[in-house]
Length: 248
Length: 289
Image 1 (cartoon, rainbow over the protein chains, first blue to last red):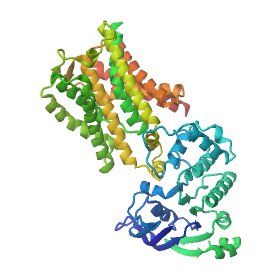
Image 2 (image 1 turned 135 degrees about the vertical axis):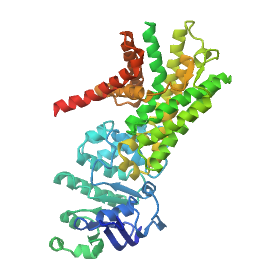
Image 3 (image 1 turned 60 degrees about the vertical axis):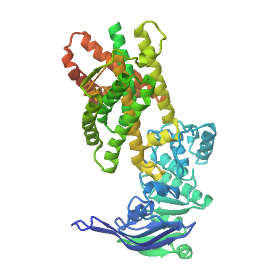
Image 4 (image 1 turned 90 degrees about the horizontal axis):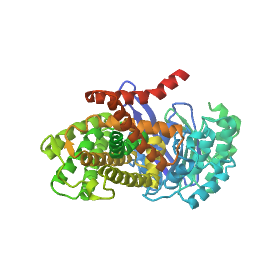
């Protein structure tokens, strides 16, 4: 599903503050894999994410999604495969728009936003039913502004929004970093459920080793712009939580 | 009384521009100075076409297209060359001055002998009421179309672009394209105000648009204050309030003139008035902190 070929990313090339964020990363992620990426700050996790999403172009190497070379494809065009949940709950939603309008856009992620009224009763019902599955009681607040909700609620809705349209890849960039432990738990459980239900290829960046142990079927540890460890399903299953802590 | 009716009428004619500024200012957070130029552009094209005996209705698409092009150029400079929107607008506005003067041929054209949009329809025998009626219907149609556009899927995408750029990018929206279209729509509306005012005042003057953007900003700020105060969420109601804001703005100016302020001071009064509207919420916020 995703193929990274010899990706190199250098920031501020030729200047005193030159940084090599990624040095020759090659990684192939199969359809349906749920990859958890861990690594200390500055190990290149976020840069790797941005290169897959298209927010950054690699200095060298190729990004292949669904057998297409998308290295030069703009971020907004990659949305035909990729849905994202950001670290900051504010980034994934439009605060001044109503919940229903936010969902409407999410439902049109891979298609044209046309000059027709799409928020009709049928659509509202679909969204209400979806939101009801969260069990947060938000299904009766769909006309409310997104900005009036808490970070946890917004992050949960962003997750739901990611599967409103055809999704192949779900990128979760520390989605729980800004949340309290309980909300964080709900979010990851919801994500896990959706990934299985919709058979998504997913990548989760996390600093929480417990989550890294609990979720996903592949574990990648990054260090100084390189892949340090790459554990497949069998190896990850054999891993003990204690081992993880010893890596750092 | 008629004095105030004239003010309301002018506010009505300028409210198309206020709707445009509502798009650039409240949706995209861009202070669009192109307004000054595209407003005169609308008036200039109206004058030239009216004196060339074109029907007022046919002039509408021409005026809107010209305004849209001006706005799109500002948008292109801003998004493609990464030049600040404020500077991009100033550049286009400055360039438009020469273009406007070239199209008009001289600095002032009277429109007393031509048939204007206000004379095409005869609903009331009293011209004052007739003008008001035609203007009102015209603006209601414009506002209704804009409200519809903003409620469509495309409109939601446009509103989201100014609100959360990271979200819209992730949802397949080309933010740059959206800004260019937004600026084009805004300046098409502004040009329409030029079209209306030229016909209402029966002349086009090359300097009639100087500082008009401040009038638009003031109107939108008054409207926005009311929108926040009454917590209005429906797009169509918000646009209606912006129209009212535009009329309140002209009424306040008319009032200041009526108490005997030198007309030469009008721009200063306008600037100070807008300054007061902008600063009230800030002073309140400062007091609270």
